[in-house]
Figure (cartoon, rainbow, N blue to C red):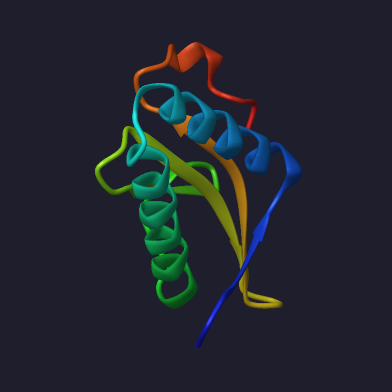
Length: 98
C-alpha cells in the first residue's frame, strides 16, 4: 500500500534553508541533498513504520546528511505528514515543538 507524503510549508522552508547552506560551500552538495531527500520520501511512501521517537512521532534519517525527517502516519487516509526536517547537530532543546 502506497502512502502519500504531505510536506508542510514549515518543512519546505527548513529544506530550502539546508539547500541554501550547502550551496554556499559546494556545487554538488545541494543536488546530493535533494537526491537523498527524494530517497527518504520514496522509503516513506512504501514503508513509513519507523521507530516511534516521541508519542506518535516517528523519524527517518536522510542518508549521508545529518538530518532527520520527523513525521506522523495517518492510516485512515494512508498519508505521511512530515512535521520537521531537523539537523542532528543542533541543540536538542531547539528542536521544533512537535
